[in-house]
Image (tube, rainbow, N blue to C red; front, side):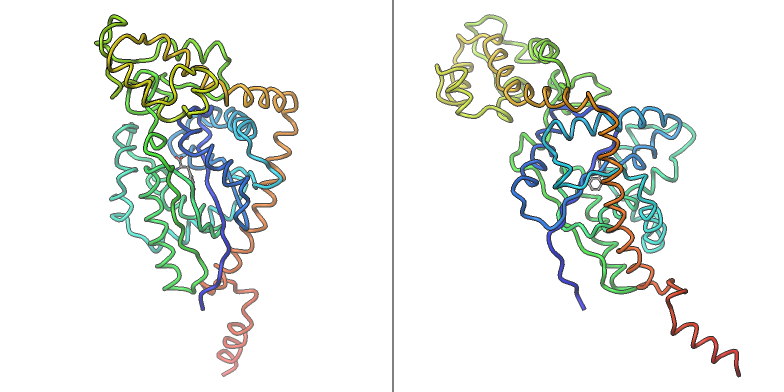
Length: 365
Ligand code: TRP
């Protein structure tokens, strides 16, 4: 018997650093939009500290410090803890419990095939071998998703392999035990530039380790300094030279962020980005003008976020209260699912009257 489920949205981030524009355009803005549209039964956003520890075992302090940073970024971006349950992964012991059982119904080679894990292993280059917990994190992530019976997981393309593993585990669990877990779908960013925002240096991805990020919490001055020194077209030396927009980070960012309304407000010389690009490509348009515009476009949403963040920063104990309440609430759902899981697996011995009866008969003979 398939149980009908409502829409449950769930997603999270590893709390290893402050969130940046790549996070914002890639998923955070979408989450806020989904939250405000209200078309769901439940919505969860969480800090994946357990997952962050899989490759930071020796550095828990980094995770500890970043819990509040990420929470502040969420709240500043408009996540409303009254609508959306905000929680911390490690505070839900049921996640570890479900992970353990899921590990029994997936093979080592299946986990090894995961392209995201493969890339990460290359990047991390663990001394002394791959930590087992790191290797298993796709299974732990499947537990994150299934424990809450999430139907919809807003995330970047790189998370698709995790969702595939999750769906496989759901099917296997439901087939072996009982149909109680739910197959989730990934919800990818709508437009292509949102899927992977390059760094300010034009490199493939915004990443803390490359030092090419604009953080949501950067000051206006920091944002301007970063935009001012952004990578453009290295052959565009004089204003009169024709410029290239492909691979030009300023234009990639404008693709991601600039609206026609921004042109009307900040740069009415052009009706839209196509007109601006055409002028740049023809020659006669300097980088600095484009950068000033980009700065205004970004500041339009960063400035209010920065202000909200400063408000929240004044009451850090309240941030932890929000996370504590969220974690307690998340645990209610978690406990409910775990009860069903234990029953499906028939390991709910103390509730299992049938087993007790059966064994009583057996030993009477
Ligand atoms: N792996 C995700 C990331 O690196 C974080 C994450 C952990 C997650 N568990 C999740 C995302 C469950 C979506 C759903 O960003």
